[in-house]
Length: 166
Image 1 (spheres, one colour):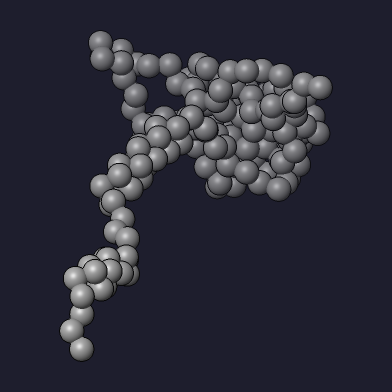
Image 2 (cartoon, helix red, strand yellow):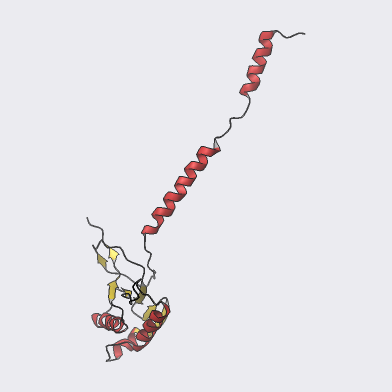
């Protein structure tokens, strides 16, 4: 049987509707490119300090963000620099000296490894961050700070947790 023109036209119309829709990949790639750049730019705002479960940092309402520096961790048992045990707290507290010699030797070694100079050629200020447990005695914190100062670390910061205001 012969098909009419109308039947042929209707058949062509139905065949056109069966095609799968195509995706516009150019627009999709643009969105992902913008998303990647957004994530790259905003991911560098956070400084992550080493975290150990043996430390409970004190809280503060300070707004200044920490800078990337050498970190000295002091918990109830050990003094650590870069995750390496330097001295035990018990031995440091038993010693009458203000300077902790093993810590000073490690800080001197670390400062020689990272010779930081300004563009003018002068020595830059060395910075160090002390992560001390909130329950350590003040005498221990004082010895650590004096040792850092004697090792020519001129800017000493104390790591704290940011306290949320209610």
